[in-house]
Length: 211
Ligand SMILES: Nc1ncnc2c1ncn2[C@@H]1O[C@H](COP(=O)(O)OP(=O)(O)OP(=O)(O)O)[C@@H](O)[C@H]1O
Ligand SMILES: [Mg+2]
Image (tube, rainbow, N blue to C red; front, side, top):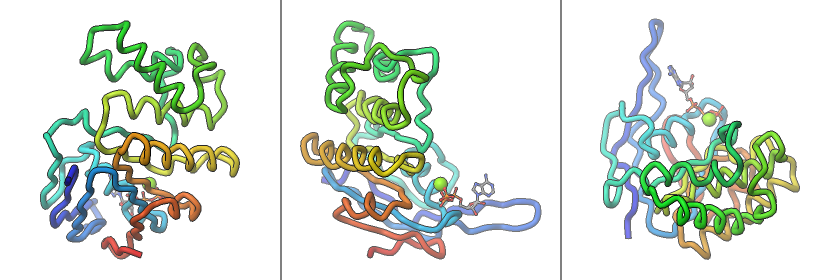
């Protein structure tokens, strides 16, 4: 089943000096349970592509189709965790759902389950500045899952982590993909992380090439 699809997507950035074509006629079909990686040099357009896939950027040519048309069906994990410093781990995980579901008790129960899934139930009441980089990223992954997304998009999720923490995150993505059957698209410079994917792409000269 298709959950997300790009059809002939192109993107230009017009500056005063030049018109840069960052994406040229990109086609991509994401099916339920897919595990996809996208590599590419710095500046090749990976974040631009992910922002379009995540509906954060709607200013492009071409078409995007999202199954069910619900923005909640996309979860985002960024290079920098973007956790809110004034909230605890469990509150950070719960927040995106609390905005839609007012049953606080149920929402927190679910957030706790997700923290268990990422192995951080013992850190649920810690604030982001009391967590290590790897732990923060695991909280961010739990948060990306709170609205039961069909697709998780991750932009350089291990970019700031050492080898050991990167391995934990890699295994976590594999587990979420397998056990929760979520489609995951990971943009990464890490060969190890790219290699966990079943479908691998490289973004080069504004085009997406399967490798
Ligand atoms: N708002 C903008 N205005 C003009 N050009 C932009 C803008 N945002 C991005 N670009 C250009 O688009 C190209 C792609 O940027 P993008 O951030 O998608 O690259 P990336 O592949 O994610 O790189 P990195 O690996 O360094 O994160 C770059 O050349 C960049 O200068
Ligand atoms: Mg980027």
